[in-house]
Length: 277
Picture 1 (cartoon, one colour):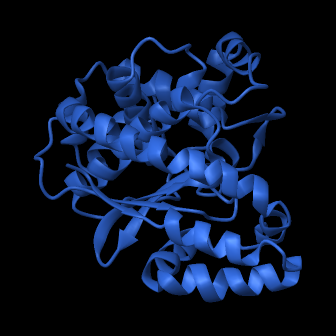
Picture 2 (cartoon, rainbow, N blue to C red; picture 1 turned 120 degrees about the vertical axis):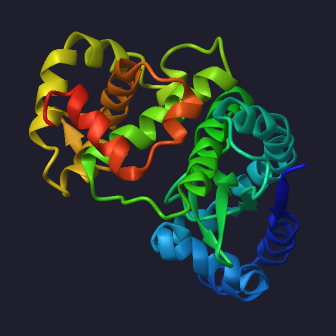
Picture 3 (cartoon, rainbow, N blue to C red; picture 1 turned 135 degrees about the vertical axis):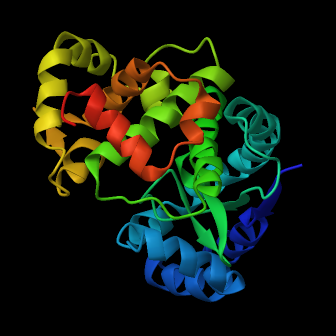
């Protein structure tokens, strides 16, 4: 069974105790009654996503967030239990060591992230982002594949190399398709969030242009934020995920073969596929 640390009960206890307080006091109680119960978890999480700037918004809407978290936690736990064995099998990696899963309430800085907790690979699932079971199933498969991939690499992969990021994200998208088949194509990029119906058609129409532009950015570490982060490519977010999907599909390799590649091999494969080696 997956290893799951669920902080939702302590979040619920904090939320109930802070409900009648002012937003300022709620933020103080958040730290004293919720974060303080899991200092190592939040230190690891904030090391990766240190922003707490959205916490004020979260505590002002505490009743809505609490309701969402109470709904999300049991669903997220069940999804992890259902999806993780399928991810591990699809990637062809040993069953141990396995990722540590943490269910927590972050500050709307990310929906999920892979990092280290007590020197182990950990997957942080941010319950405040929960919106649908179908979308979360794909997201769990995607992020869980990152966790298993990082374990297989036996190192923390680089985050400022566009070629590696294309390989890493392309493998996760391919894994989510294998483990959660039959979803609409856009779900493998947007996890059932609405408002992005035109995104994939736009990417496909400009596929050659986007691939060439990405190729020209391969030696620019700052391009990772543009293609995979909060930056925009011609007014569109996260276009690097489309590029990553196309490039990894071009490699024509099975998932276990892809996960067995080193960082250098993955990076080189992407550059070769783009004609940049």
